[in-house]
Amino acid sequence: MGHQDALDREEMIQFVLSCWDEDAGAFGAHPSHDAHILATLSGIQILVIQDALDRLSPERTERVVQFILDRQTPAGVFSGDSFGETDTRFTHCSVLSLALLGRLSELDKPYPSTSESHPETRKAKILDYTRKCRNFDGAFGSKIDAESHAAQVFVCTGTLAVLGALNDPSCLDRDTCAWWLSERQLPNGGLNGRPEKLEDVCYSFWVLSSLSILGKLSWIDADKLTSFILSSQDPEQGGIADRPDNMVDVFHTVFGVAGLSLVGYPGLVDLDPVYCMPAAVIEKKGLRTGWKALPRKQK
Image (tube, rainbow, N blue to C red; front, side):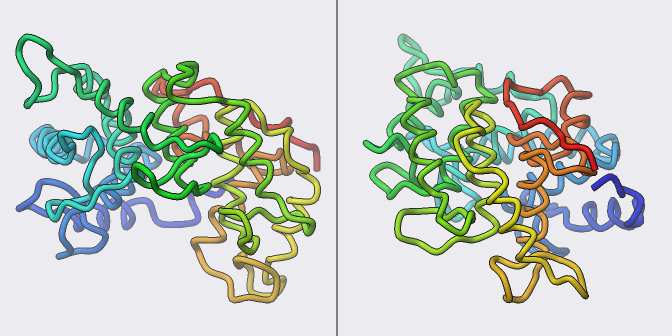
């Protein structure tokens, strides 16, 4: 929203650093919490946005990289922590974390358990698993044979974008996937995450980000979606809820604002849909992929 100084920068950085899990070598969601790839990506994202990645020492950076690489399973998908739950979300978070740390090249190295005569890279194993998560409707699930879900489409298309595989037809059918995403819009303008589900403001990001990555953002009615998001605000206290007249929260506020940015709502900065971070921050790091948002409207 162009108000990065609204929160104290140093307090934010110190909080992130206080969430370091010394035993695991990565970040937890709160001080003294166990490390997890979700919190680790969030910590890295905050440090990058605050131009404070240098506050992560070289030793800790190496430990984070190793924590991430240790999460990749022989199947190719990543787990979130040492307990072993796997999900395409965790793969996306791992790939983004490595990219933001400038260590994406780690994925070009052979996976440790592959044979010496036929070595397979970590990247190849990621693409193979992601490919297997694509369903007949063109969308993706959280794991092989899982139901298609808009948030999983986002993480899978985002992973493919970062790894340069969006144009690989064995991984993605752009038109079929975009069709499935466009079918998520309901008559009131809101978007749902799966067929026959209620609309929810958070899918303004999950669906729009994927359509933006695919270059198909014009396949939804942006004006109706904008009206739905704005109608979900609390006009007195601020913030955005999942739908009109419900309680607002930070989760739906961030994804509502993110959706508004992607459809060109006036007064907002451009958002990179792959990272859900300000586009200028990602461009500065040389990580922009070929996504397309709608033109920014004038106030």
